[in-house]
Image (tube, rainbow, N blue to C red; front, side, top):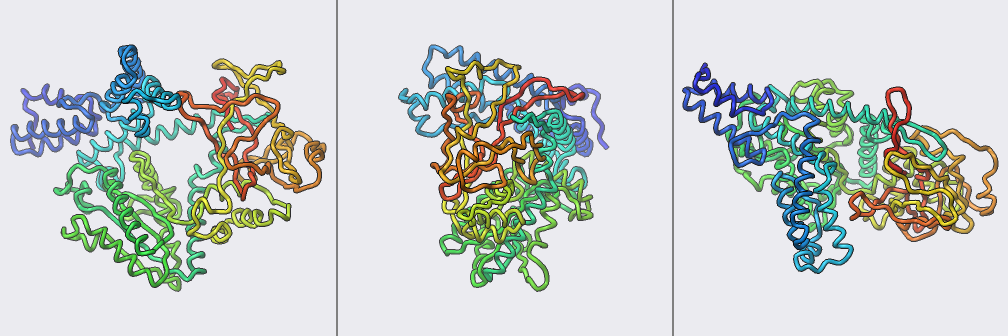
Amino acid sequence: MLEVHPHDTDWVKQRLQGLPQIHKNAVMNHYKKQPNRREANTHIREVTRAISKVLGHNSTHIYCVNIEDNDYQIKANHHARQCAIIEGKFHSASLFKVYSAIVRYVTAYQLKPHPLPDTVLSNLQDDNLTQDELVKVLGVIKRACDASWWKPKLRKLHNKQIETVSRLLNLVNKHRGIYASDTNVEAYLTQWKSNRELLENTLATNELDYSVSLAELSDLNVSNPKIRKAELMVRIRGFEDYSLEMGYKGVFLTMTTPSKYHRSFAKSGTENPKWQGATPLDGQDYLNRTFQRIRASLNRNQITPFGFRVAEPHHDGTPHWHLLLFVPAEQQEQLIQTFQEYCLEEDGDEQGAKDCRFKVEYIDSEKGSATGYIAKYVTKGVDGEGIEHDLYGTDSVSAAIRIRVWASCWGIRQFQQIGGVGVTQWRELRRLDKITDQSLQWVEDIRLAADESNWCRYTELMGGVFCKRDEQLIRPLYAHKKLQLKDDNSNKSRETTKGETVQQPKVNLVCLTTHSGIAAINPEITEINSGLVPKIPKKRTETNPVITEIGSGMITENPAIFTESTVNQPLSSNTSTEQLKTNKYGDEFMTQLKGIVCLGFEIITRVHEWTLSHSDAGGEKCSNLEFCQ
C-alpha cells in the first residue's frame, strides 16, 4: 500500500485542509490504492478540484467545509455587512445598478436572491417602477443586508455541499452511510435536538392567560410522526374505498432514474462508472419532469388517475418513486403503457433498463388491499415503527431517521396526494364540535365525516376526487394579519419596543361582523381545537351577553364565528384602527389561516390570540418573541 512521500506531506495536508476527518480518510484511502506517487498526487489534485467546484470556488483551495454552528452566524454577519457596503457604494447610482450588484454578490455564493416578477425587473431596468414595485425591489436589497436572511440559507447550502462531497467520495451507500452521510445525520440529529429544546422552552399564552409550550402543541399535529403516519394511512385507505365504490382498479407503480444518476452499485458499494456527478436533487428533477410529461399525455387521452406518490432513496441517496394510482379498468393498460414509454425514453436501451426502470404490480382486492402495498413505504419514511428492517437489512427506525435526513437535506417532498380534495379543510373541520343549526346540516355532514376519519365520505361530500379546488364546497380561509394600533380614545398604546411584553387584547365579538340569525360563541368560555390542542380552562360560567344580544339563531358548541362576507376579507372592527401587518422587509403582507369558507359563510376556527415568550429551565418567562395567532 502506497504511503505519502515525505516531500509530499505538507502539500497533501494543505490540499485537504478544511475537510471533515471522515472525508480526509476517504481521500487518503483512495490515495494509498494508487500504483505510484505520481498517480496518487494526480488523484489528490483531481479530487480537491472537484470538491472546490462543489463549494463554488474556481481555485483548488478547498476553504473550510467542516464548520460549526456558530460559524454560520459569523459568515451571515459578514455577508450582510458586505451587501450593506455595496448598497452604500452605489447609493448615488441608479437603483438598477444597486440591485444588480447585490444579485451578483448573492449568486456568487451559490444562493438565489428573493425572486421578482419579470414585469418588475423590466420596469426596474427602464427606471419606471410603481410604488408597490419599488417596495418589492427594496425588499430584495434589505434581505441581502440582513444576517438572519443569510444564516438559514448558508446552513442549508452547507448541508447540501457536505452531502455532495460525501457522494463524490462514495461515502453514501449501504456499506458506509446508507441514504445519507454519517456527517449530515449527526448534524441533523443535533439540530433536531436543539429545535426540540427551543420548542420546550417557548410558551404560547393566549388572551385567557392559558399557557402551553410549543413542544406540546407540536405533538398534537402532523409534526408528530405518529399523527402524520396515521393521517396518511387514513387518506390512502379512503382513496381505496372510494375507488371500490366507483369500480376503479388500483395499480402500484415504481419509477426510478437512469444509471447515470446512481453513485454506486447496491451489492458491492463500488463506484458506478456511468455516474456523471448527479445529485439526488438532479434525480428528483428528472422524476418530476418525466411525471409532468406523463400527466400531460394522460390528460390528452382523458385519463385522470388519483392516488398517492411516495419518494424514497436508494441506498446511495438516489431517489425513486412509488405510486399507488386508481383508474377505470378500461384505462388501466393505457396508463401503464404511457408510464413505460416515458420512463424508458431517456437511456432506455441501457442494460437492465426494461427490468429496473419501471415496475408494475396489479392490485387484486381479493388477495389484499391496495393500502397494504404502500403502507411499508409510508412507515419507512416516517418513523419505521411496525416493520423490522428495510430492503437493505437496516433497522427500520434507524433507516427512517436517515431517510428523513435525506429528505430534509435535499428538500425532497416525501408524500404527495394526486387528485382528490384538500386536506387543509379536513384538518380545520376536525377542530370543530357539532354544528346544531339545521340550515348548515350539510356542513355538519362533512365535519362529521372528517371527525370520524372517513376520507372516502369526506371526498364524496366535498365534490369527489375530480372536483377542482375552486369548486369544492369548503375552502380554506386565509386573512391578512393586522396590527392593532392606538385609538384616539384609548389610554393604552399598542406600540412596544424590543423586549417588551405585548398586552393581549380580549376578543370582542360585538365588533365582529355577524350575519343576522347566526350567533357566535364567546371564545373566552369555549374550548379550542377539540382533539388537537389542550383544552383551555373555562374562566366564566355566566351567560354570554353577545349571544343574548344577537338573539335566536344557530348556537354551536365550537369556537367558530360565522360571517357572510366576501372570501378572504379581514374581519372589520369599529373600535380600533387596523393596519395590515407586513414582514420585516415591508414588501409582503403576512397572511394566516383563519378557518374555512362554506358557500360564502366564513367559519373562524382560530379565534385566540397568542403571545410567544421564551422561558428558561426554571420555567420563568423571559422576553416576548412575537405577537401571533
